[in-house]
Image (tube, rainbow, N blue to C red; front, side, top):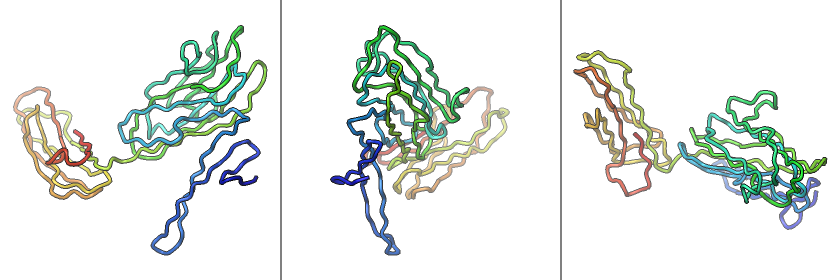
Length: 290
């Protein structure tokens, strides 16, 4: 391998740029964080997750694409993907085949669908860990496909904070009776906390006999990145406030609890709601929950 203008050329025709962040720890050691970004060379096809790095927040919906670049003579493909379903949840997907129906897609009509499966519990009869399996082939007299295009788009919802690679289990590209060499670039997702984020929890019984009392336990957590001040906590029953409090100082990772002794008098279904919000809204970008 040889280094040219800060890029490392490998025998696999990939170039890698090494970005360094240097800092000093409290003990005086030098701390170096390195991130390698792959850039496809011109001579080989590349199948990649686009964007390759995504930062979202819990409950956000987002879409990634699987893209092929610089391909010549494409007539069939087989792509298998994996991710961590405990961090992101699959919502839906669209296969961008053929280009006659999806101008930004790949391959030409007529098309044969071989596999089009997404299952977060796993897919039988294939490589363990595969959650998405997409396989399509063009059929005569379809012409070969050249260039760049979207193979697949996937929409997810972030369900908890954490880091989640979106990685290729396998990728096969084929021409008419030929194998097309390719490189792959996985994606990387970070589900990050909001700068200002409150999460609430309301403990209630499923059933209670009219005339009997029960203790409602309402808790708010500061799961954001900043300390908060003057946070209002309101407990509502059928849209009427029955108890409330204001927390003047609310540090990161702390919690506040509101109790209420409740005695329902008649048999019916009640709507219990807990709201947490800043006393002076509009001062900062703030995500509240209920």
